[in-house]
Amino acid sequence: NAGVTQTPKFQVLKTGQSMTLQCAQDMNHNSMYWYRQDPGMGLRLIYYSASEGTTDKGEVPNGYNVSRLNKREFSLRLESAAPSQTSVYFCASSQQTQGYYGYTFGSGTRLTVV
Amino acid sequence: TQLLEQSPQFLSIQEGENLTVYCNSSSVFSSLQWYRQEPGEGPVLLVTVVTGGEVKKLKRLTFQFGDARKDSSLHITAAQPGDTGLYLCAAGGTSYGKLTFGQGTILTVHP
Image 1 (cartoon, helix red, strand yellow):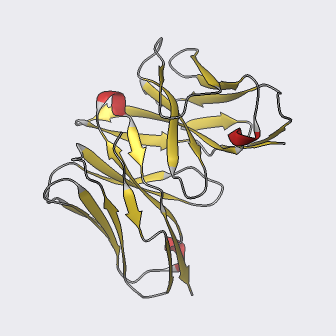
Image 2 (cartoon, rainbow over the protein chains, first blue to last red; image 1 turned 60 degrees about the horizontal axis):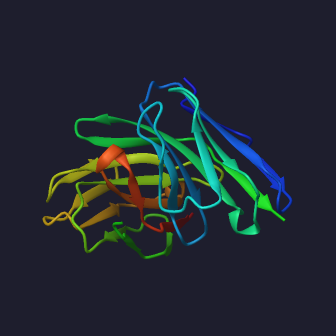
């Protein structure tokens, strides 16, 4: 049981380049999320998808787009990368259990924009 | 957006010592979760608390949810080097399970 799988694990981009971060989960969870993690700032929500076919902005959506391709897959796209987007990106999924949500995270994508 | 303040930000202790990490907010939480993250990995859920005054124990870890549901603490007894990592609190349980995370506490336990 793989849980949440993210690809790639590492990426270096030049300013202005584009790329897509891939995320897939095999737990049949309805909700999926993209967070970025920066030193001293915890995890900040970029976009989320409550269910297949829906997506919504989180706390820091500027410069990003997402696609909920199906129930399993939720991708994050950087159209024109900027140095401020250098970060570690985490995908997570969740399924409501007994009135609260527990997240399962992927192992992250470390992105450097030069 | 709920703002979560964790303290301390850094904690360096010797094996066998006890420690407490705090998570506070001015808002009332519907639920609160604690995660532990190791270098190069994603956070892993340790516990969820949902009831004011609730106490949960996980081996040497004790989690407490404040009576007013605005604060929480994580207490580790007799810390071990394997406890080293980043500890994150997260509040939420609101629409569609969106969580707000604290900035984290980096714990280092020296042998």
